[in-house]
Length: 230
Image 1 (cartoon, rainbow, N blue to C red):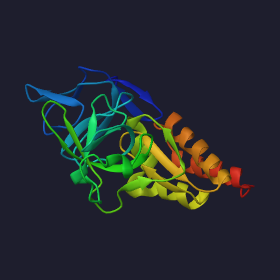
Image 2 (cartoon, rainbow, N blue to C red):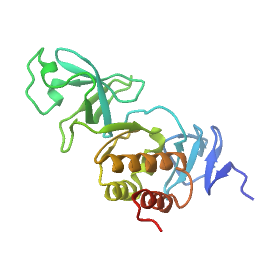
Image 3 (cartoon, rainbow, N blue to C red):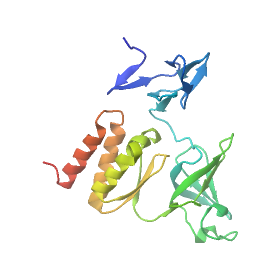
């Protein structure tokens, strides 16, 4: 009988210090290695891969990782950078060298203002959690109009879905443009009805992230709200 942790809709919930693997597995994110055994370092969902085991956190603030795409909001402006809130406990300056325009010293306010929403990439996180963000990559930009909602960063993989399947379904069935940041911020724009349906669907995904058959539930919700259901 497996009593190593509780279960929620078929997914194993583990607690800090719980034994996850005895041998043959690498310690992935959210775990630690002790005496050749892998233990949970946080409360979350046990995730087992062929060569590793990890724990997906149930809740918590966004911890930046190099390469992540995030949705940020400008909260302050300096002569050579903008300070961006990325839903993290750590400050995130965006330097003028990391935007797609030539910005002279002291002219940052001519290009972007406090309150502007940006699609950014984390380009560096050092050992003391100093963060560097950039708009210097394909698709990164200032996001005009639309609206931003927030979900727990730990639920972002479910909003995106395997190989992007969930987010693609949301876009197709609502007609909205949607950008999902790894920091739990989601920007969307489209017709009001489509936005409202997307918000309801994303709320369902967040609330039922650990349930089985979630994709079909979300699809039925979107069909009902669009009048396509039976």
